[in-house]
Image 1 (cartoon, rainbow, N blue to C red):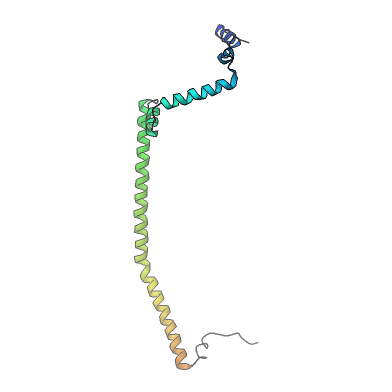
Image 2 (cartoon, rainbow, N blue to C red; image 1 turned 180 degrees about the horizontal axis):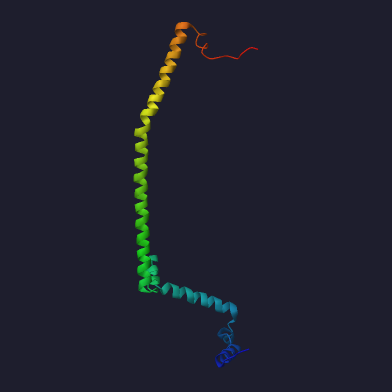
Length: 143
């Protein structure tokens, strides 16, 4: 139920509205064809816009302080990501080179000690025979 005069006027206008194509006798199918053709003609008349031009046009809708804040936020985020990336690269380089320098001698010395032990076992086996190398290892006990 309408409450104001403007709503009553709006309803009266919508009741008496008639489609202009029906008055001409064009029907629905003929009108859509002409509307599509008109839309294509209007589209061809418009100049081509690049994405950056569209974004720039959209940016002008917002107030200047909001645009400045957004620009500052994007710049700060970009700088932060770059600095974190640089720091992580430097930190990983320092970590891996330091670990190689510190642990490589220990690994080499352990490997050398194992090789000496293997050489001593081989030398003992050659001098005393094949059964003597196994005497150090206790076999299964008989009950």
